[in-house]
Amino acid sequence: MFKPLQLKRLAAWLMALLPIVPLLSCGQSSKQSSSERKPTSMNISNTASIAPGMEKATFGTGCFWCTEAMFESLDGVSEAVSGYEGGTKANPTYKEVCTGTTGHAECVEVTYDPKKITYAELLQAFFRSHDPTSLNRQGADVGTQYRSVIFYHNDEQKQLAETIKKELNESGAYDKPIVTEISPASTFYVAEDYHQSYFANNPEQGYCAFVIAPKLDKFRKVFKDKLKSSELSSH
Image: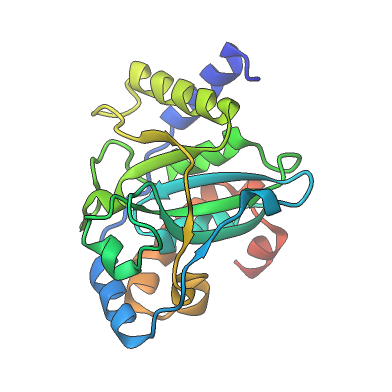
């Protein structure tokens, strides 16, 4: 469990940082990509299949292409998978989620080694990487599917997420109240294959080159001490 002093220090650390907010929308790029590629069947993530010693965390910060790229760069994260969670329709497709009527959020399920990176550090990355005061919107991407959300997998994750959110709100870290949803993890539907590792596979694509790349560069500078060695050697 985390002591109050540790939480206050974490909140103070986050206060010193301005969120990296995307300047353009990935919505149009996403729609174009989905029309060019055939969708694949959906898969349901199975938490029971986690390797011993590993844990899961799930975050939504807007377009999942960018969320995935940032969490994937952190040392201790073995996998970051793009998908849909928090809705009512089983096996939703990307097209359905984009309507905003299924209730799902675009999010990323992170598998990590808590001995290398803690959940508190993942929360630092979460709050640093988007605007948590923007309701159902990140940049030009508008809709409940782009909401700021934390899906917790156990009581400790819930307590830490709620405490940090409260500390940040009370400290006035942002000009507006944080609207991040904190909900229990439910069924996570893995997104279509072409969404996985999208930035890594499409670095020259417009949104990737002009939005994700500069945003990821800023993220790497802030979290340089937490990056994988491969990230350090390639940049």
